[in-house]
Length: 137
Length: 137
Length: 137
Length: 137
Image (tube, rainbow over all chains, first blue to last red; front, side, top):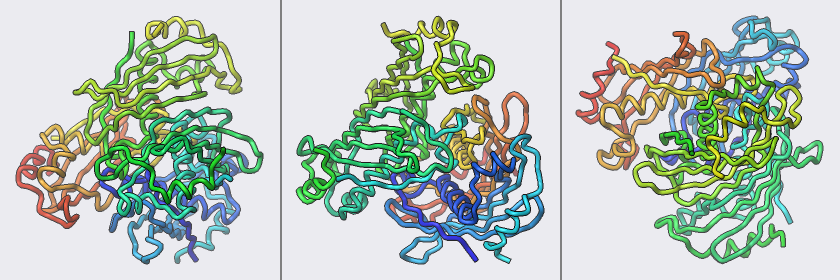
């Protein structure tokens, strides 16, 4: 299963080349991961306060295939792989909604930390079980 | 009548003070104006290409009353005043959705330019008539 | 006296209109205020930790006169007015460096808060005395 | 040889986690590449207008090792590899200036396009020769 989030392109997202600025796709990808977790009942602000847990991006690999433009409606597609006890790997796409064209792909490795100490910790069991619904494998 | 747009606060919008960064409210306000125009059938990319028309912000006044925070759901409320033939004035609010609290207010003066020359021009008649639906006065 | 900070325009600052995005001037203005304070020996991260003091923007008024473009070198000019015990007012300009053209002007009202409680507090005496060097009046 | 650019961390760069937001390192990396090229006499705005040439990022890989914080002074280190006629590969680091700690590393693949058609083109000979000064191999 995968999670899909609609994202509209505004002037704030574009640059003088007339297309979405390359760093801003990382904002789209993060919105997709955040809403995928929220759909499962987990909010990042709540996790930090109640479970002493934050997620931090450890590595990203992004391929820019085709540019997005002003007023485009995009779809951010998110799947989760579960490589270990303390980290998650996301596979994400930005797709042009009315053309089924893949514009950008990302692999994002996220680690789980204690909010209080910023030391690695195991992913809480309830999150691990919940995110399996987006598992690619 | 007024136009309301829901906006979610993500990490991208916040700063190390733990709240939404002051410049980022201008992104929210622009999303509100853009969607208010789109609701009436006008897209900024289409206006530039087909009607040789762009809108440019000439002045803003923003009051920051209360801070927005990560995961908040905000509502951007947009009304339009019509002070002249070549400019529009917007009155906008950012409101906390579950508390009816006004967080930020803005007055935004937008001028109408020819896309080809960047010289002032009269607002096209069809836009003028359409935006009256959001008119405050 | 006034404080001047050189700022270069990169792709990140521009939008699909080919010019600097209107919200991004607020970043330039904040860099100017931050470096003006740093020049006097005050760092915002240090103020929060050691003096329980943060500054928060309460209101801005910005006039957009002429657009800045990719690769432009800008100068952010900062002066301070001292209207009260708990707030500062900055007058700021963005100027095109090789043309002495004023592109954007801002009036920024900043309030002084306790970092721990976010309640208003008097501006610490050493800061008040120091910023008088940038005083416009 | 390598090119080094000093970058200061402002509120605009940080997020509610208290550290630099992960997408914003891509801005720092782009400033580094831009200034490395400018040092050699090439400005992106000039390339587009005079040589019908733009560079577009095709892929990035970023490793986030340690976080940067408000008021940090960073150094963006840029080296260039020359894998082909129509693309450049950059190796970049963000280093904490007063600690010689590597915070973030990036490999960035940039392709050369005609500005008028957005089709791939060979990198102009004068640029190819000039960038060899930053060549890692």
